[in-house]
Image (cartoon, rainbow, N blue to C red; front, top):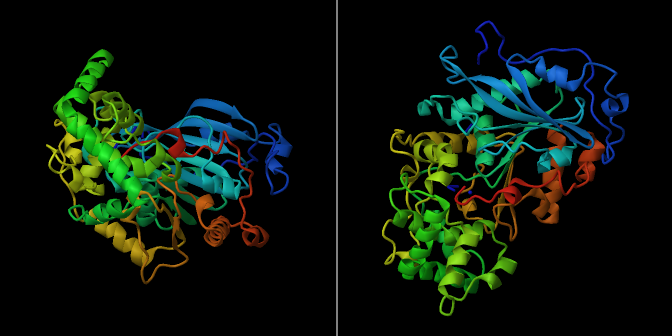
Length: 485
């Protein structure tokens, strides 16, 4: 999860909902399995346009509208307090997007936990319920970052409250059931939102959400990496990873030359050598996080016979040599800050590298500029974990069998209701409901449909209500592969 965010409302403005009469309009609905789209069939002249309704929300402004057949897609700014506890102490503009289908459909509230993808796309629950999708850029990811940034206001409660205000602001436009979702840090974000505002959403679908309850106890990750996948594949990956440290001198010359030519620098991490080793130390984790072991093992170079160029190119393909440069880290300062203050991060031992490693698996502090103070709050994650175990209600956690982040999953205990933890066999950090075994896939789909308030017939059928669209349904993991989060 490291490599596995961006109100001039007066105090008299009501926080939350806006009530505007009229039906929202949208384009035609050629792919729906649920019958005609009433708003699409009425057209844009039959009532207040959806754009007008969105822009009537206090604090909402339009960045752009992009067309997509069957939908209206808007990228917007929403004015948020920097500090929800003291809303008079300044505001910032938070980007959101709205994929509008029909105000009579359910709405899925998505967060990646990072920045905002600003082109039309649809998350799996949105496809399943054939609904609207509201997406949010996580606070302090640029451009949704106050200037100057008070980093002490970047925490999971402040971020959950961002979501709460947006939900309340849009609930009057989208009055049907709402579900929250996200993958990886986005799955964590959906979970933390539910923990702090359990009365907002009608269900949670959290994909591959890490749960590092005790930051100093990370042996689960070591056990996972020692047993994941076929042994011959593990051995092959570990060997080429070790070889990249054995050949540190010649490969680092390539790295240094490439960095100089590309204008990359290493002030945040400290030295080129630290950056080089951090990339190599990610290799085994990154392989299992994103590679399909069934096909990828054959493409791992054989350490004993690989050339320097082959080793260098392979590490670059799996991880990317730019990962710990200043230029790359700048985009993820907010993530590393949270990992080092609340979320925790793995400290894996990788004994096959111990005699060659100079720095170990480096902590988040190494990837945040020293001008930003950080202090870890060890009580935050245990509080969330305990709440999920004993208070979860209508929550679904989906993990991938081969994903290292699933080594410390969310678990359910006494008191949890209508909640599930499911694991997709052979899947990695891109695990989804579609990849579950048939019985669990049907169960998960049915519960998502039920939570969305859809008809008993749809729930019983337990199939997505919208057909798969290869452009619209690109999953986050396919758009941008990020290591360690």
